[in-house]
Length: 208
Length: 222
Image (tube, rainbow over all chains, first blue to last red; front, side, top):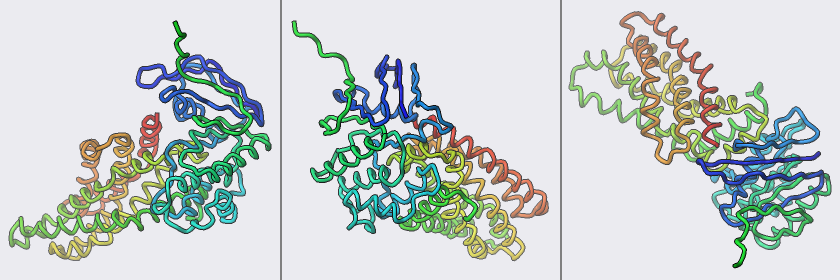
């Protein structure tokens, strides 16, 4: 699988966030999107997920498949999509049923295994309202493990995570790349995975 | 529930679980309903014949307002916590997701109102025929109120305080349902004709509202 984007440009509220952006990723490759706050990292990820319309340019997934691009992507944004009144298990098992594309759909064992992989084995049955910010983030990231989708769009995946969890998430990302997956991550931290870098934002003004 | 694809079954289960645990929706609607019904006799005065005559209308107005309560959160909660983005990433069409969310909302707020209406009708001195007619018309009409409300909820999804705007948007659309619902319940022009028109209105809402709401949500997400 490959993803190719060319001449992307996105407009938000009449302002061009970025223009003429392009990249090409093959199976097993990762792209880190970097840049200052407001440079359009999240906007780029949302546009790639199909959640924002493009003002210009095209995004192509090769080989072309019947599924919409959105159905090939995992998108983990700033909002965790975790309902405080449901337990971590209920949250993830709902999201897995929602996002699964091919039968067999992930059952309870896969959901529990995914939560355990992210180190949430002990709080599976706790309402998410009692989880810390980092634990909620991990519950949100657990859907990457529970449901297979080839393209991962991660917006600041390591925010709020402790060092041990960061290492686990990086391991999971490396495993996904080894299986031929594609990762596009917006980040300020340096992620310890082999990745190309796409720097957004206005070029620094040259010193006089 | 067996016939639904598993994603929709999971969504219905989730929304019902959230509604039950937060505990507001169902009981709040019924208590609001009870308040309106309970204060009406004091406002109208001790005239039982008059009360019985306007009883069906009061029950319908109360049900309409009780349905509006909390309707603005139908999609807003999901939009705020990012669930809506994931709905859009699912292979399940957004129209069906909207429909299932409406079903869950009706089961949590509409159905308790229908179940409580014979009791509240009794408090207004309705006779047995009118009690049956009010309950039947509410049973058929409240789903339409939820579905029309879903359009308004989807349009106001990104507004911080969309509740008032929501009411202004959907009240005109609910007027036909109110007219034929009260007509069927009061029985002044017979029961069957207005009841069948009410059924027709509900079916129209069922057919159109999911598409309208899904369209509004897609644009709201941008």
